[in-house]
Image (cartoon, rainbow, N blue to C red; front, top):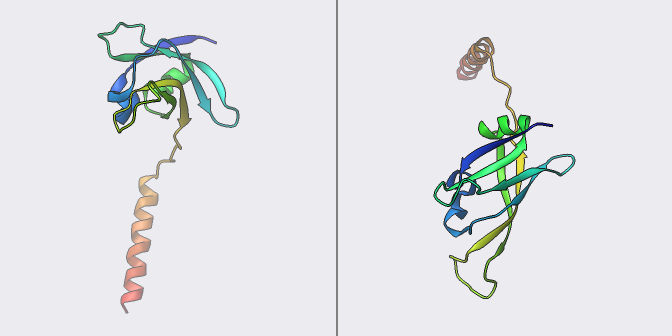
Length: 127
């Protein structure tokens, strides 16, 4: 299995959690599905000014990850459990990837047939 590193900006991965998340050393990546498997890890080895996660995952996962075929979810804990409020800092424990459902493309001919069928149904119902 060939591993390919892929850098993705932290805001793109974390979304709303971006401003709350502490830096990471190494976090496991789990691919959710029939079997929840650990497929690699993510780190911030590009340096503190890069502001990106470096994903170390297999090549086929890397290609899908680069084209947004996965939804991110996180397991985290609060950095300071004693603090309260909406701006509590978090530390990532793991990143989970869930595959997006692939929608089959609809051909032009079937779109046209559906439109003609819809027009015919409207003509019948208006009589």
